[in-house]
Image (cartoon, rainbow over all chains, first blue to last red; front, side, top):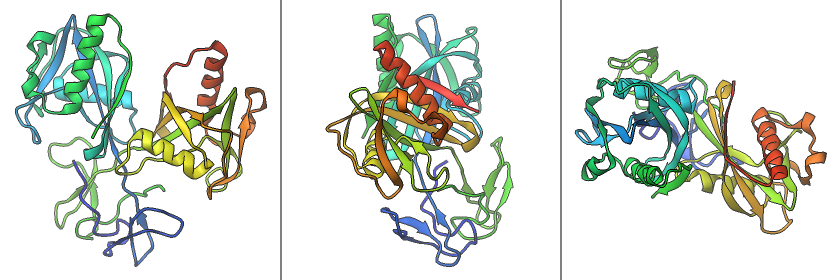
Amino acid sequence: MHNPPIRHCTACGAAVTYRVPEGDSRPRAVCPACGHIQYENPRNIVGTIPAWEQQVLLCRRAIEPRYGLWTLPAGFMELGESTESGALRETREEAGAEVTLGGLYAVINVLPANQVYFFYRGQLAQPQWLAGEESLEVKLFREADIPWEQIAFRSVAQTLKRYFADQRAGRFQIHTFDIT
Amino acid sequence: MHNPPIRHCTACGAAVTYRVPEGDSRPRAVCPACGHIQYENPRNIVGTIPAWEQQVLLCRRAIEPRYGLWTLPAGFMELGESTESGALRETREEAGAEVTLGGLYAVINVLPANQVYFFYRGQLAQPQWLAGEESLEVKLFREADIPWEQIAFRSVAQTLKRYFADQRAGRFQIHTFDIT
């Protein structure tokens, strides 16, 4: 779910050129035939940290990239949804779990991927889940059992480290950070 | 800076059809010729609340939509930047002002526009600014002088209301809310 550079105009199909339009300061995909400018912007990844007692629910990825590694349930935010509703949807799709949202926990700029991550705290209604199509396995982990060497993404590992530190401190606060 | 529905494939230029790809649950712009799927996702708007003493710097829009109305400096997040660096860039471009960021203040889902707003608190280094090309005028306002009937966007009005309430309370906290 990554868009490669634009080669053709989405409005008329002609081959585009990348140039700086008048009044702009960045190269854009501009159509020499119809004048349409196709903008490209960072995308949002929305997910949750599903909790049950002192444990967190992780999913083992059944898809590339990072097949077989562990992650929090999260995915691309879709048109027509909010960051919260997207996070709930991803938790259902990937972990087959229903959570009650407990507030925004982390906002992470992942600069190499042009992505912004949103993780919400989530309280599992019951210790119940079901690996979705994109997960090989879904499992609760205590802090001591987290497979740190097999976490799929730095954004997820750094979120989990902050989460367990806050849990130990007995106080959850919002975290904003960049991955460069 | 809004992308209309996709009519042609960005990879090969053929006419696309909207259909649900296998293994997906939503209609996407799929190319019948080359198979490329062009995803569309919400976009981020990044900006600041530039403060000087008890006042906030607003810009009067020199562009559509909402020409002539007042807003906070903000605009589309670009590829290659973080939400913070984008917010600083927009503050420079629209208000000609340099601010020191004071943390994330508001995250707003604007559902009808498929946008997520990020507003950061900003401390003006000096009471100095310059209307950019997209602004007719840039001016500091005390709470009592805010032209509430002439604020360009609900997201901005609601952010300013929360900001001044927090300022009165002497404690700024992060706000997350939806505009539907």
